[in-house]
Length: 74
Image (cartoon, rainbow, N blue to C red; front, side, top):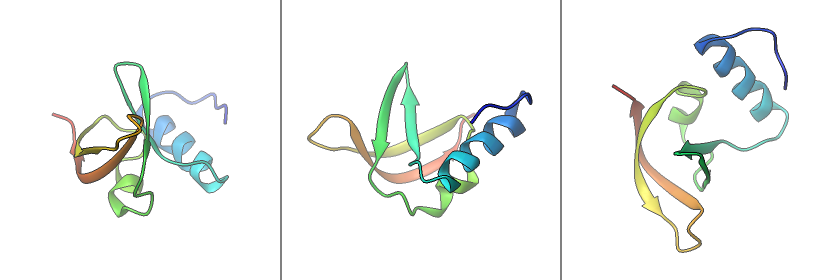
């Protein structure tokens, strides 16, 4: 979804609009995109579009993460 808004609020709105349209949450780190196994985790919506600290397990496929904990980045 394209928007003319900028900043943190725009990133959150854009991310949530994509989720509502049927896309999945992903985690991006150092330019690499990881799929998230547990898409129903409530914190995903809370931190949508934000920089976060993620704790979890990288699955054997090397591209999917099972999140154990998600929190705001410091």
